[in-house]
Length: 94
Ligand SMILES: [Zn+2]
Image (tube, rainbow, N blue to C red):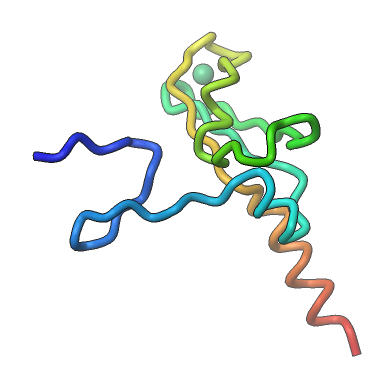
């Protein structure tokens, strides 16, 4: 079996889905990323300021360590709260 990257999504036929990067996230108006700890479920939000444009969002977690349990088993993805805010603003626009 193919060696898959646990931080990537794959299609049914097994090809890797290109992840969002810091640059594409910023283009969508996102400046924050949610990080979860898989060991203790601690959740934190980090800014993408100062991160390289070509850094995949799922790899941002590699740069962090859980502040609660010290674990490195983290998961990062674009901030859902930020997206919810954008949707609300668009719906309110006349
Ligand atoms: Zn933790």
